[in-house]
Amino acid sequence: MLAKWLSGLMAVDLPQPRIGGAAVEMAEVRKTYITGAGEFEALKGINLTVAAGEFVAVVGKSGSGKSTLINMITGIDRPTGGEVWVAGMPVHTLNENQIAVWRGRTVGVVFQFFQLLPTLTVLENVMLPMDFCSMFDRSERPARALKLLELVGVHEQAHKLPANLSGGQQQRVAIARSLANDPPLLVADEPTGNLDSRTAAAVIDFFKELAAGGKTILMVTHDNDLARRSGRIVTVYDGQVMSDRNAENGSSV
Ligand SMILES: Nc1ncnc2c1ncn2[C@@H]1O[C@H](COP(=O)(O)OP(=O)(O)OP(=O)(O)O)[C@@H](O)[C@H]1O
Image (cartoon, rainbow, N blue to C red; front, top):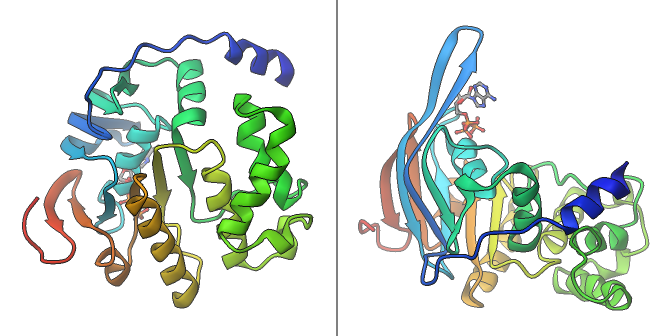
């Protein structure tokens, strides 16, 4: 069943990306959820453009729409209206199979609760996106995974199961996994929410290095101190972008 689904994905065609697009472009993005109590508008016309190599922190009160916003970018959820372009790809037009293939190749996703597969070793977890997308030669994948684990400082744990690692180590593994296919865009939803402040700061420093190397990083956080260490702070309030500022000097973007 899984093999059939995967071989189906291999045959998926993606549209040609538009040349010269920004890393992320959201235009008038709306999201309405249908709930038992009626319609709820979680995003009310988001406009946001992010250039390649930017490190953007998305902040705002609980329920303001931060996760919904970034889920539009990863294609985890679909907009009700508006357009979402990622590196020239019209994500809002892709079907489910196209999104799965496109995301696997283009976006690294990091979650608060790590979401490592408990029955696979750390190394196997990092190899998974490469296997899933048939990226890199099969024989190269273990060495590449090990290199990524070394980059985040947990290579000595490569043959352990995730449960035998600390929370900080597990998040490092999740970050290594998100980089497996060398995606240009990394999207992290509260990646430091379960980490102590020192480990959280180390994760932010690593994100800064990745951004300096040209990757685009979007990170949802509740922690204003960590947000200030990014390059740009987008504040979401009631489904809208309330402010968009340079993290260092506070000037409007
Ligand atoms: N699947 C859904 N169905 C109905 N309502 C939803 C759904 N997902 C989110 N919402 C609602 O949309 C609003 C925005 O949710 P979202 O998770 O994006 O907020 P958030 O800013 O990320 O919050 P938090 O910081 O608590 O994670 C909330 O009121 C939430 O209850």
